Image 1 (cartoon, rainbow, N blue to C red):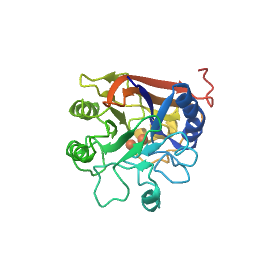
Image 2 (image 1 turned 90 degrees about the vertical axis):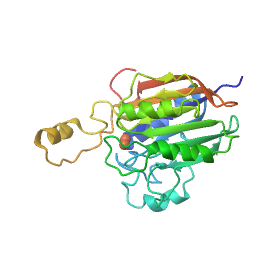
Image 3 (image 1 turned 180 degrees about the vertical axis):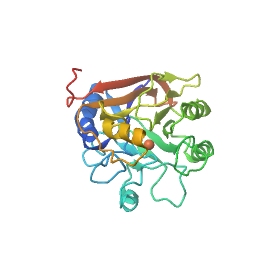
Length: 270
Ligand SMILES: [Fe+2]
Ligand SMILES: [Fe+2]
């Protein structure tokens, strides 16, 4: 039986996140023998949104594909750039009038093809979107039967919605990776039907921060209820990811492990 490894990197936050992915991400990908890598990049440009320039050296480079989220359109002009970026997937259950694609099929250099789908949750999320369950059902019907390995980034806040999606897709996809909270959960597991699942992969962002942003500014925002400039912290980066081993012949997951490391930019010993 063939077994392949896929690396999924949690929300990359700003410049510090990009540096950590370029160094540590590349190292982990090699060390863990991952033939494919997906990363959530919705915060890659200054903490909010994506630009083609920010993907330089990250994807392609470390990540073969990057996924979006509720912040995908935060950078002006990305609606134009995304059209020519085949490696970028934005949420599939957003309006069909949005540019870009919500899922795509890629060649895995190690074996065959795989599909990547991006979906947005609707519980406690401000972004307007269609039902992610109905959307993913429609996408699965469109993916050719020859594509056995399917990976879903479910970008959502509520663990209940993420677990419901994972069980809904159990046996139909290879893995469901939760993203968006920037905090890694300790529930990585294989569901009974052979789908790997983790509620949230976490982030590549500053450890001594609140979700990658200046902790004092965030605290002040909570205390005062007034708008604050929430600067992205670019040092002391933690690197959160998950690695799935799967059988490309039937698309079933064999193993999932979460990874959470401090990068070399940290003062904390690894
Ligand atoms: Fe995020
Ligand atoms: Fe998000």
